Structure formats: C-alpha cells, structure tokens
Image (tube, rainbow, N blue to C red; front, side):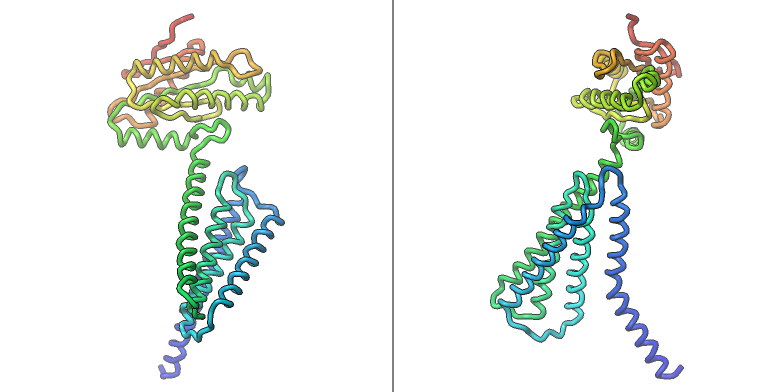
Length: 342
C-alpha cells in the first residue's frame, strides 16, 4: 500500500472520529426525545403541554439567554482563543441543555416537578454559556466565572432532585393500583417474596374476597362497583396505618393484607376486626357489604405462592361456608372456620 493510501486512511479515521464526537450528543438527544414522546403517552399522568405555554417557555429561555450573552459581552474584552475543542464541547453542551429544555417544555406531568426541571436545565445552560465565554473573552473580575460555576452547580443539583422526584413518582405509579390507591398485585407479590427470603419472622397473609360483588355490578352498574372498591380500599388503608404490613388489591374484588411478625391468634383477631369493619361501614347507596376472609401463617421454607394459595383457599372456604366469615388455613392442609355463628 502506498504512502498516499495510508495518508487517506488516516485522514478518513480522523474525520470519522471527529464526526462521532460531534454527532454523539445529537444521537443522544434523538434517543431522549423518543423517550419523552413515549412518556407523553402515559395515561392520566403525562400529557402534551398546550402549545402557547410551551412557546412562552421556549421564548422566555431564548430572550433571557440572549440577554445574558449581551450582558457578558458588554462587561468583557474579546480574546483570541485557540482552544477550539473546548469551545466546541461547551457549545454543544449548552445546545444539548437547550434542546432538553425544549423537549421538557412540551410535556405536562401530573404531580411531577417539571417546573423545577426546567429551572435546572436553564441554569445549566446559562452556566455552560458563561464558562464558554470565559474561554473566548476576558472578564474584568472573577465574579462572572464564579457565577458560571454557581449556575452549573445549582443546575446540576436541581436536575438531580427533579430526576429523583420523577423516578420516585414513576415507581409509585408502577406499584399502586389506580382505582383503590392500594399496592397492586405485582408489588404485593414481590414484597411477600422478599420478606420470606430476608426475614425469619412469621408472615400472615389475609386474603379478602368481597361477597356477591357480581350482583352489585349487575344491580347498580360497574361505576358503582368501582365506588365500592374505592371505599373498601380506603377502609383497608386506614385500617393498616397503625399495623405493620401492607394492603394490596390483588384482583377484581380481591384484596390481601400481609402482616409482619404475626401469630395465629393476632392474625385471626385482625381478620375478624376487618370483617366487622367492612360489614359495619357500607358505602353510600348500598345497605350491606360483606367479605369472606382467609388467613394463612407462613411455615418454614414455604414459598410466597404456596402461602398465598393457602390463604386464598381459606377465603374460598369462607365463601362456600356461608360468606361473611373468617377461615384459617392450618399447618396440616386443613381449613377451619373461626368466625362465631351469629
């Protein structure tokens, strides 16, 4: 291979390396924009912001940024900088922050601190611009470089806090049943499995199956059925505030309570209190609502699915035995009714 060929290959490699450095941030922006578009499709939580509001936010960003550039230029003296790589990197970073600002401006998230994220991105953008100016011009004092560093620091902290809040909100959405605001089945299953693996204390599962719920839907409609489920969810949430464990909706009209450090007697007592609470506090529009409840206490080396299956079988036994009662799944595959006959 000739020297010219080697030179051409070397020039091509250098050109490709430079292209990758320049366009990598752009590829990242495209990927983030795709993620944000996916987020915009999340029902009830994230939606597109109205266009006028988005335009106002972006316009305000441009006006304030332009004002900052003019102000910095007026209080400084131009220099001839030869550090083009640094200028290119910082300029690309500022552009990247602005593009993220634009992307975040067009979404609206219920409960998410989007405004704080916008403030953090704007502070980061301005801090990078001031640092870029520090490479190109000479400031009359060290105040402006310090301001740039402060903007970078504050912007990073605000973005990190907003990102943490957004992740926490996302986890809450993923682990919560929307209708009842209790934990959902997926979280409940993981929680029980994790507890049985990590803890050596007994765990009681209290399975709750609402009685004659189909007839409630048939007579009053599914909207009223949802109202009943929300009412039961609120009862369970208030009931568990002073107790160690979690309450979850695991099916249509099925709920479960996982009770930490439970004994057989304490689990049965809790189940009876819960049965009476549901019976004595019906939602408006219906005279009486009851539940069939099953209780199972964890055994040595028992899996989460086996424990929950025993509790579910005990709830089914309560329903088959006349409804509105509590049954206990014993350690020898036996199920017995523990509710006193009225």
